[in-house]
Length: 321
Image (cartoon, rainbow, N blue to C red; front, side, top):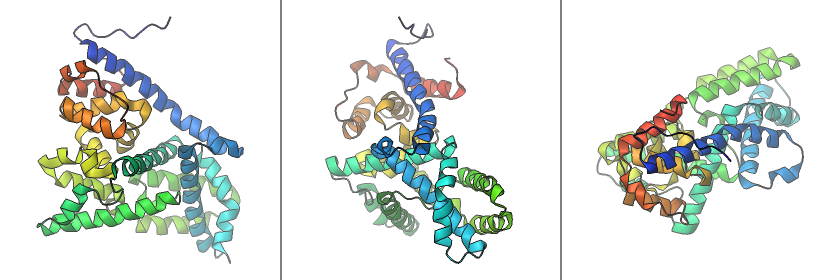
């Protein structure tokens, strides 16, 4: 028999249930990067039948290829693309042991999968959601201009995801830095330090995190102000803005917010929406679009927003309090 975790004495049954489900979901999240790393490093193509794993592998390969093309150009290679193809698989394999990158690529793959499902089941355009359309048409010039920039960035994201690609300058700032350091360390054995250093300088000089899709989405959602709840309506906001709003409203990392839409993370999604101040009926509506076969228990309506936030915060601290 598996012992259930002991709940605080003042904890309601619904809180204990959600706390336990959240802990189980987090345990699954902890295994994602190691499992993905094993699959990506394995040469057996039968392991890539799963669409998410195949997409992560494609994105990692594309990141490796971009870095190596830049390196080949800096080294004066006659054919930088051929140079990149020669070294790409080895660099990508080394990235398979880098959990932070795999988690980010996995989160983007989950976001793409959600956007596709919303389009197929609810006719929600993955680029131009009703919310974005309204903001583009705003009388406020700054709001309209910001929305147009997001629209263009989201259109590029969808195009890249269809090809299982991710421009390296779209990585979050800290991850961008770590990827470049990893690449530099990986190439030390090839005695091409000067070429890597030159390519790295060029990449860093042109990097602008605030101009990337994630930065643009964050500013757009933040700019809505008290209307951020509109972005927490997934059929109105679309997957991209919904995930950014979910992260902002609950003070969670965006990758975690994206992964919370996955089937095994329903407790985290429910707690996050409740912590953001959303009422039970509105949360049920989001579940209808994300997990149409799932019905929240009636007792969920008894969970207070501050208690949901406390449960999430406790998991971040790694405690059960």
